[in-house]
Image (cartoon, rainbow, N blue to C red; front, side, top):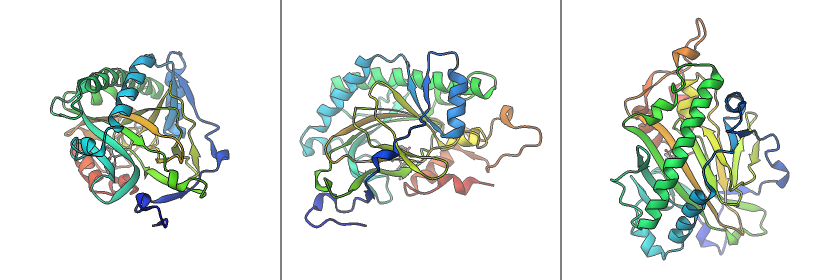
Length: 326
Ligand code: GA4
């Protein structure tokens, strides 16, 4: 752990070498959801990177902007007010601590439960009616995008029915999570040649994650060869990640992408992410339609409930799927 003298605020936050500006993800796949070629382009990107940028997704800029302004307003409240919306687990406001096993990042966030297509009624946070309305409008819209993308994935993989993947997320009792992250600028590190870890490297346990951020960069993904590349921000686009469960459902054809967020020394980053997971009892195993003659599953059989429990008992950077390999 690096500790900077005179900067107690960043104590305990792991530091990273500043990304080389030349390491932008130059080959990033950009998929136009309105184009007839989208299914093939999505499947191709998920096989090569487990990640792509999505444009022409149909979600109005207003819906995204309204949620961003409400989030900015919330995170500008006095610390004591925000703490009243905590703790983060199972759902609520959290700061710097990620998960329950000692991971730390330079961020504050809201972790929220989604029921069907809106905030779960059981989730009392946030209490502000305008913020809740903006969240509900955005969640309904982003979930529709996630469903369209999963349908396109099935089509791109050449499997039927078209809802073979999306039905797991739209099913009654599906486990959907929403998070709003705020990465404040980390002034203490300005000019020092290193950056604070906003959110340490990890893969997402669910099927799919759909992220939207403001215009501040920070997201990085690991390519298959282990090289980290920075994803230039685009407030009009979504960024889609393949999660561990989708890697298993496709028997390793789609890759669960390792990613992380680096805090900016000058500007705030705000991101909102929808995580589509299945019902607790859903069996996670390769879809029979995808297994070739004689092809065996690469993974042991498990349910989403079992995987989630193992994930929440792990450290952020652990290779969680390794324990489920045959
Ligand atoms: C990563 C994806 C989602 O943000 C999340 C995260 C969760 C958390 O922040 O509580 C986890 C992380 C995520 C995977 C491993 C465990 C659980 C933190 C952590 C150390 C909400 C999720 O579902 O899994």
